[in-house]
Image (cartoon, rainbow over all chains, first blue to last red; front, side, top):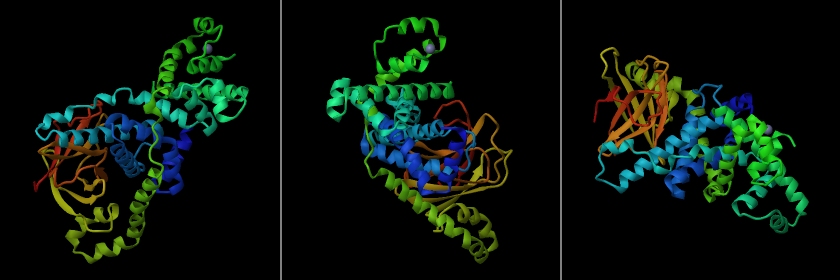
Length: 180
Length: 211
Ligand SMILES: [Zn+2]
């Protein structure tokens, strides 16, 4: 997304505009939930973390540098929320742990940035292309199997898959430059 | 085939004749190839495809809607409300009325500086919410944090400390923390270097007085 789109979306989000909240959720909600689930390993905690991330983002939205890109900004908030909840849960589980425990990071915190980048890139794809990526990568189907599953010609699956991967490659290269 | 086609093929995990030859002469694609292969493994990872519950977005919209509405209503009556209460109380409460909910806070306390270079006191008020505590800090006494630092507000208790979030300048700040003050009675503001370390620094600048 262009910087001006980011800025505009964040401003509308800061005003609590429902369409902006939904758009932000469409773009980043799954990535936030996925990050929290990776760190916390529990779906209901991940839901809590996702809600808390949106709440914190909303509270900070009108105070943040307007040029700061949305994705990395939300990632920072989501990561922080997940770490805080992880520590809270850890403390509840080990009542005897002393204050030094606060420095402990969840072991699953590594690679959350890479997973975040892939998930947000996938979520920007049109639904039919996302579906092809899911069928071939996650379910491991061949193009022929995917075609049978979707009831469409193999040629369509191939061209859709190529288009989806081209789009992903472009997006991931851009994200890489943005975070370099 | 152009570079994007070659990159798509790597991401797709497709054996394409000529790929190695292209990588040998194209610095950009060579630089990206490793990342693309890593991304390809993430695409096969079940955790990447986990979906949140379908109603989560609606719940977030409701939550933020509930929070925005009093904010709008409050503006029209905050001035009147501020005049009704006594002058001294009005000063302390103004930030709460402007930033916080129209309802009375569930608790409020004074914070004092631990650095002799800062004078005055700050006020912090909290509202218990479903997901923890919403906090409004009036810290007009704090100067802006130095460029490579930020302020951070913490809830501290016997179990350790939990961050409510960071802010750069003094003034009125609204933050949220996922715990209750009942369990974390002490409130601290620290000055944090931007070093990526999520643990609190030793530079405590404000401390609550009632716990
Ligand atoms: Zn190339």
